[in-house]
Image 1: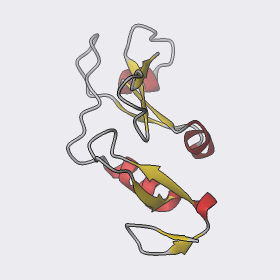
Image 2: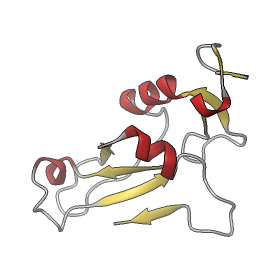
Image 3: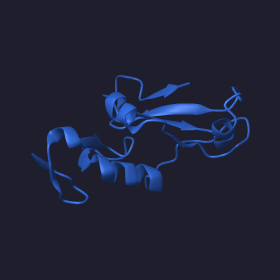
Length: 111
């Protein structure tokens, strides 16, 4: 059992995730999956996912399946125009790990 650092609920280890706010925290926090979803949906403080080079709109989280996020430990941020119209292949998308890998590896994936 472990405790969510946000809601203080005691949970089994498979019900929590480690999250370092996309590299802004030195040590990842342990939070339950529900608190993690709320943070992502609300927006991570002081995190700028970037802008689409085509239309200059801020990238937003694009999550089809939260189970995939928890399994892959990766969140995709996409141009809102590309989310509305998937045929727009020239608009930006980038993946950010929910816990950044060591400094000697690439922290993001470009799609």
